[in-house]
Image 1 (tube, helix red, strand yellow):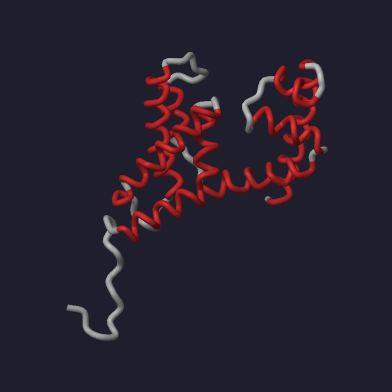
Image 2: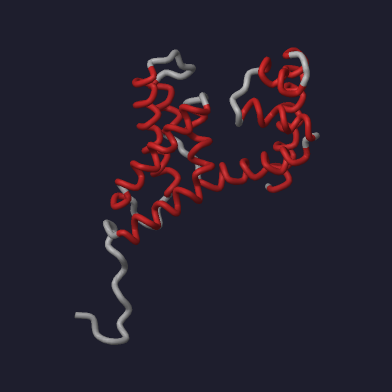
Length: 183
């Protein structure tokens, strides 16, 4: 029995409060986890499916997460297994072998590593010209082909490819500058 004035014991790892904490951590770091998944499974639609499956598994296994440890590494380990499951299920030709995925997954950086890069990309995207930002968005968020983007913006596919190449170069230069300045 707890005497008056004694603080309550910390929640049990299997409690609803711990599960909620783990889910909040997932939402906080989902950009990093999604970037990790996309590095292993470059199809955006497949990566979003794996992200959802990862969230469900993280929620179900919340009791196994030890508070105070590296949440991103723990969640990315789960995501890695979900990526491998998806690759087997999809049976599509892929860029990386399972052994390559395993090797890449051995050294998951700290969460700040990705977060500062994601923030740098956001700042740099905001600096792009509106049309360049639009085609980058359509290509990488919308999953549109250069032909589809060309039809939407009234350009030939070749012009879209050139504009995307210039936008990627501008983004790379900007992100490198942002990261050097932050360091």
